[in-house]
Length: 281
Ligand code: G1P
Image 1 (cartoon, rainbow, N blue to C red):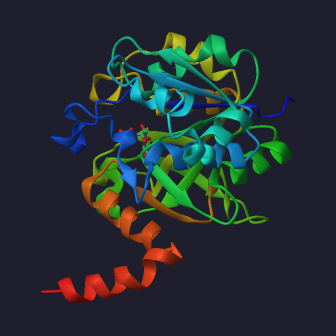
Image 2 (cartoon, rainbow, N blue to C red):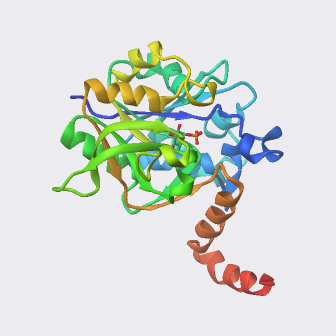
Image 3 (cartoon, protein in one colour):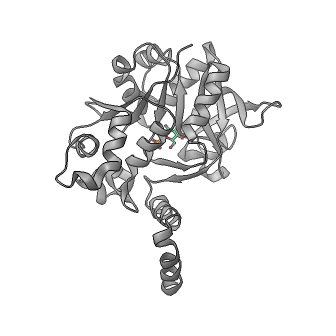
């Protein structure tokens, strides 16, 4: 079984949840403190040992790859970004129509080739001592199977996520054997409160499944539906990752992430606490 070298980062989304700000600026470029949110995702991948980042992007959102690839007159001040682009090669493929997450992953098929790969969704920021995708890669190394990140949510949140029907391992309670998955079920149809968050390690057998898939929830080609089919022919695991997750594609989640990451910065921490106290109504 091959090593995970490549990560697919789908960034073609329209950012509807964050209008009007996303009308002309990709949500992935919104700063969390002073870095675009997509940089946190690229850093997570690089820190996990990923060698190639594959952006699946759309027309009009070129600012994302330009950010990592273009030179800047004040280049010296941007050493951190340049170092990232040197640690991993960055390539882009276009998703020509917004046909869903499953379709976006399929667009990366030729660049990924016949090897297992990681997927990181830009909306989900996870702060963890071991990067979230690295935690999944470790499980992949032990079990040689696809792994998806899971977190427990409130019952009324289940319509916002892919939800797992899974059995918890006694030997390692963070690991689940996936029986099946449902994309954004109504609350009463959710098989559990275990939600998929945007980190996956997938075997290349997902590609032929995606090629054959018809549209699912929301009229889109869903990665979750492809995983249901993959789980019928191969072991698919869930992993309840360790870490704190923010939904940066949501207005409130984005605010929360900004406050959290600013509080972690020594130069802002005390001032921010004081400012929040002063503003409290
Ligand atoms: C996608 C997946 C969903 C998952 C979610 C995590 O949905 O389809 O299964 O729970 O990401 O962020 P999206 O939020 O892109 O609609």
